[in-house]
Image 1 (cartoon, rainbow, N blue to C red):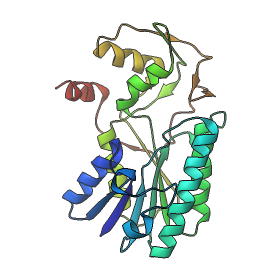
Image 2: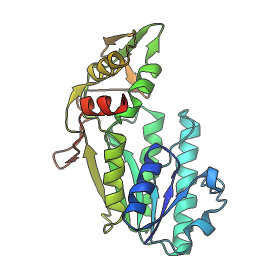
Image 3: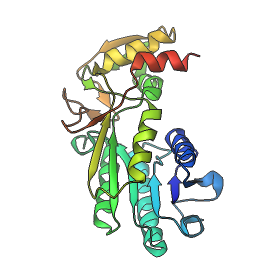
Length: 249
């Protein structure tokens, strides 16, 4: 089938396109680089012509509260309208475990708004909630760094490899619409500060990681289990150590 991957040139999208293509599907990588702009609507009608599924793994270029809200609401409305015009019968979106519990964050408020638009659109849908990616360890550290110190809340987290995220999202996209959510998580549980400390040490990064209960995460204060999925979450296989070893090659 034809599956259009919005954000198809990014970290997750490029992996999804490769996996779907290997399975024999017509996977189309749609992004501003290919002339498809979900904010303006440019190129959407042409890209979605004949598509059975649209998979949205795009992300906002800015995490500022107003900008990220505008990105997710405008792009999602444009995308859903184009899907209805093209008779697309499955909308799949990648989101984040804990989104609905992190209302202090402008980013997560925008993700909630995006999910609400999808739910209310009338287009059959599946929303995949993933935990944080191993690939973003350095970005998390950078955002929490002051001088040579990284302050992070010592809360539970079950991160996963981007390749495992792509596998799970690709699987959902070729199945029947869930008209609901599926959670996907990594195989291990860490404390957030512990995860980042181990990741930095593996790259000989000298920054000191300090456990600080008052530290925020994308602008939100965290309780111990807000980043943890429910009991029905699907666990992936790649451990953090395996990922570190593979990424070092």
